[in-house]
Length: 125
Image 1 (cartoon, rainbow, N blue to C red):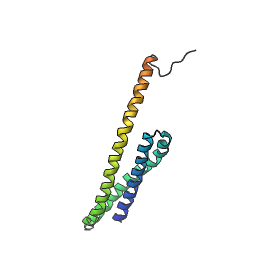
Image 2 (cartoon, one colour):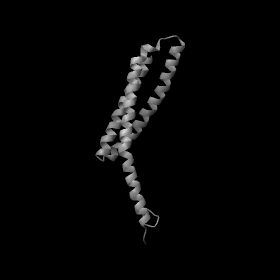
Image 3 (cartoon, helix red, strand yellow):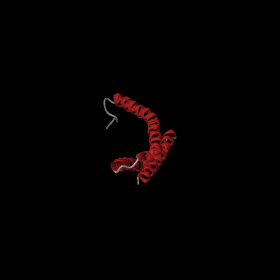
Image 4 (spheres, rainbow, N blue to C red):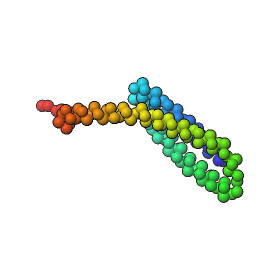
């Protein structure tokens, strides 16, 4: 049961890593529409990983309470941790690309707003 949950989480992490890798490619190539299309998928994957994490913790706690040797699961849990670490690093890479672009757009909007007397759009009649 524990190995099944770990394998499920690894599969979810691999799917999320693929989605983030695609995001990095799309940001680099300015394919913004594809980014938006993937948002719901990524949110679902993150929720599933979080839910599965809680379930895995419960399974491990039950195994310990029942006197099982949880060291039997060490390799699979270590593999899961490696996938989650890679996911964290990919997310950081995506953020390092997206945040400067966000700042650039903010600066452009601030400059336009300043030139238009505090309004983003200049309305003339």
